Length: 227
Image (cartoon, rainbow, N blue to C red; front, side, top):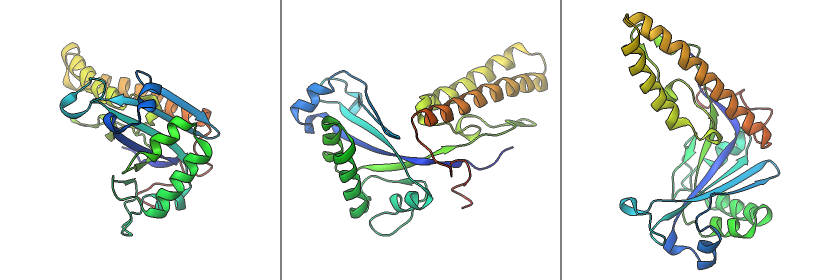
């Protein structure tokens, strides 16, 4: 139905900090804001998320940040190889960042980020990372077997639509099965609609990445599964 997702040429470093552990001035700066910093071929964003047991009361939330940084294939391998020398390939779990990679992350933050965002990186004990991928299929159906969600289209996080896309696949399938008399006709109509929507979202994500100056000449050329 399609090929493997391909590395887009950049990674997302991520961090989560309990709001109670933030310096008071940072809590004030980011109080109820969704904050962005668009730099030279980089983007940083941060926002509060619920804390333990879904808590949303100020002081009990968590600060979540994401930092998109360009990295070639060798850089991706280096970032996702942990402190014990184990290569994880597409991501790096919390608590395993290699000391030299962590030092380089802090140095980069000091050189590139505005002070409040730099301090977020510095206050994060266990940053983690993931590769940004592009993936698409030409078919979402084989008989009565269907591909939905990320199994069909892997889109960039800038779209903020991955979960929505999966939900829409399910909702539109339910609607098609109700409205079209035959099973084959319902699945055919559903596939046509979802392929068009998935491709539009896939292209939008790539376009957003390009406008941010992210990605590289290598983007779209290498599958992380096939090398």
